[in-house]
Image (tube, rainbow, N blue to C red; front, side, top):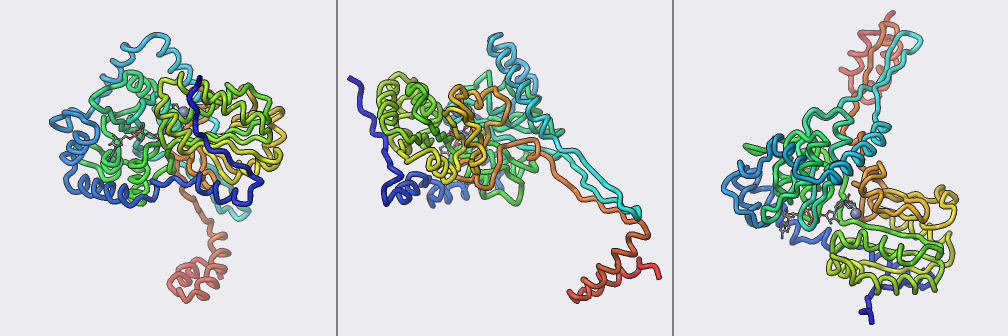
Length: 436
Ligand SMILES: NC(=O)c1ccc[n+]([C@@H]2O[C@H](COP(=O)([O-])OP(=O)(O)OC[C@H]3O[C@@H](n4cnc5c(N)ncnc54)[C@H](O)[C@@H]3O)[C@@H](O)[C@H]2O)c1
Ligand SMILES: N[C@H](CO)Cc1c[nH]c[nH+]1
Ligand SMILES: [Zn+2]
């Protein structure tokens, strides 16, 4: 007898479906005042007391018995050493994944451009990499070598000269594959710190941690909240919170596959969200049975169960058109289209961090090695955010180089508009260049 799993069932035909869906999608702790207050206190302490505060918070939150910041710095040689401590199979997998991620991201690289107008005026855009990028690699409940690759490779492809990584090592447990991934991805400096204190250190700098220009990478509620608060002092990529998966299935995929696809994200975090949408009620029952059968076999059963029971759902829809409407409403981090001919639905999909096409494309392949980035917008932010990419590490400057003739013509227009704004110094500056 398998233990029942209390996964929520919703029916899009119900009058109160929209209300239930909103409730399901709300990530309560995002706006939690308690978390906000704690994170603000941490940021303030790190700004005021630098390394000393980082060390104290690391002792408290990561249960690490360290005396000073020197114990939390890993030199490049330590990363190289990790390469010798992992198995040949692990190294091969990391290198293959890194190569695939690099090839994909090379395509995202933007180049500077310019064009010349008839009068000789040149207009263009100069693309420059950031000077220094900070990568947050999560490490509280699991270790993420794959996130090292996904964060660092686009930064290096963009040409960022200095890539600083932070990763918590709770109880001092260092994951050698994480460090090996950092070596493979050419990370320049690593600090074994995490949470809001690491974000604050990267944003404001401490005696040991250099201030960066932008902080990227996923993390838990403390990390996400801290990134929100330091935005403005530094750039951030997006708010990438607890993992999510939305599977849309026509009812023809093996229900065990779908159950495991849901677990693949549920096992990340109690707050992770795994949802299945299908127009086939009998199929939803089969997946519910697979969930109950397979959940006890998971190594991370407790986390996955909390996620599935607390934030998961099986949603019955009228047809595939309604399934796609629900998907767009949810704007999930990962959307699996486990259907025949997924291409037919692609034009209607407007909001999703990454779209996994067809029954064979398990979301897990994208997490590790397909090539596209796995740092993706969560909590509906795919409505306005994109996957982490090379473009996050490049910025643009406009180039304007007027010829004498061009300055004369533009000066006439600028003069009129400036006088319309009563900004006469602007007008006169432009007018000096007008040829009579
Ligand atoms: N969207 C993505 O691309 C992506 C990728 C990988 C992981 N994730 C998500 O990232 C998250 C990782 O979370 P995690 O917890 O494993 O690691 P984490 O590194 O994000 O957080 C661990 C840190 O949180 C801080 N912390 C913990 N409890 C605290 C408390 N009570 N007060 C203050 N600080 C506290 C500690 O400093 C600790 O070092 C998961 O939700 C996972 O789903 C997302
Ligand atoms: N699914 C995560 C992004 O939401 C990425 C990841 C890393 N390792 C396994 N999965
Ligand atoms: Zn994952």
